Image 1 (cartoon, rainbow, N blue to C red):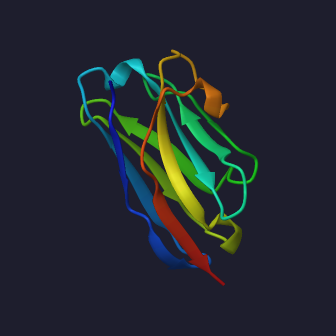
Image 2 (cartoon, rainbow, N blue to C red):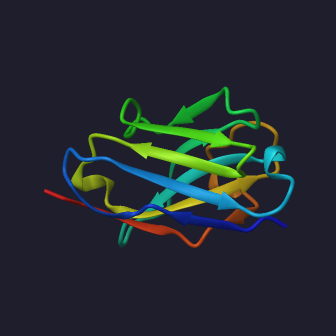
Image 3 (cartoon, rainbow, N blue to C red):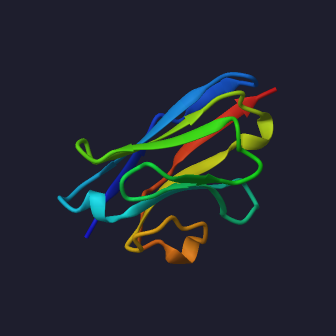
Length: 124
């Protein structure tokens, strides 16, 4: 079992930055590929970014590529999402997730554990 707790969300003006954190319980964090997803009001949950077990390989949705950076610290059981140049369309609840697959995963169905989400609101 892995429990995930996100933090770092909030209200920011367009062009600003936020850093989301996701703390994982348990000793097996390094065995999970990690991902960030988001869900805007009335929309389906969408993929944002994923990172492999060691943290040396990442993948991003086209909508955030070049603006967002996913990283992880296996020593601290934490995955991060640095969000720069935020836009109003980035407004959503952001979720971190853990996948038992050893490789990066872009599909929500590949993830076994989910956090409760953290709200990010970008004002224009």
